[in-house]
Image (cartoon, rainbow, N blue to C red; front, top):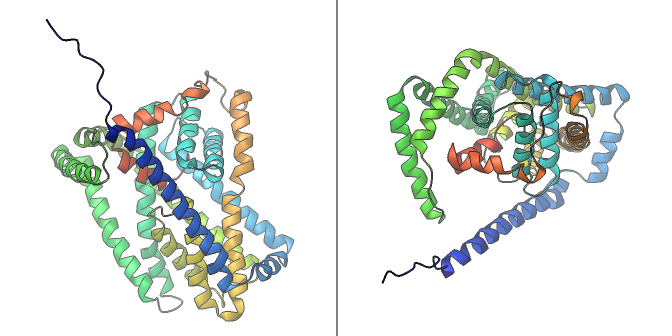
Length: 397
């Protein structure tokens, strides 16, 4: 008599995995919250009190405030042009809606990055962008933004020598950035040009990621060589056709973000003699390189502390309050505006799609918005690599 197989037994290990994952998420979230609270509660007031910061900000004139607002608007718009450079089928107003809507979610909700990815995918897919195109956008924009973060310290070092003697930290950061930039550029070039290199690199990366998954007790269910070959075919054509445009747009998006910082420094009354623009570029480049690793969401806390520490050291004790005010103003005008604008963009996309896209198509069901992103992560690229590139991507999120 043939035995009838019953359902697979559920072990205590299987039951304990969700609890361990939840515990890890809670631990990471709590660690980030504690770090941010310590920075804003103890470290930032060590440089200047919030009362003196408010006084410095309140002393700004209307022309100075308009200069800061114009710089912030230009920085925001440069991101939209960057999206259009990687996704040529997307119009500028569509890029603006997707960028603002996803950033509003990422800046306000816990675990907002994953939700923002779902929102941006839902928006662009309703305008005819395929899943493969969205994944290609995420990877290419993420890689190019990492290139920009690695190259900025080199540029900053070159311009800083015209104003003052650069510090050892910036020299070291520029050296590390230059070496990593050269290695990544050569690796990407070989990956696009040689299928054999893509296979060898895929096998090596597969081996490393399998070891990582074993260490974190996660199942390694991905095909890195196949993913790299697929990326090579799609990215090669995109880079050949629009590589220079993507490079210029990415550089403009990063440099206009620095111009917002410079406008805030000048807006609170700091002169070229107190904080040279070369020093502000060096501080911006160093902190951007420092926040490649996402220790806190959006680098919040770490960015502020790094900029204040570097700029205040060169400006002198008397200008510390103004430096702190400028940095906090810079973070406010780049972090807060996308929240209300993104809410308006989401409402327009949902209830007035004709204002955004003339040839409207039915939007995906609300309950299925996040499903395609999960499929993208599981089937096309390794989750750990895509998650890191997502953090460093410029554009839809």
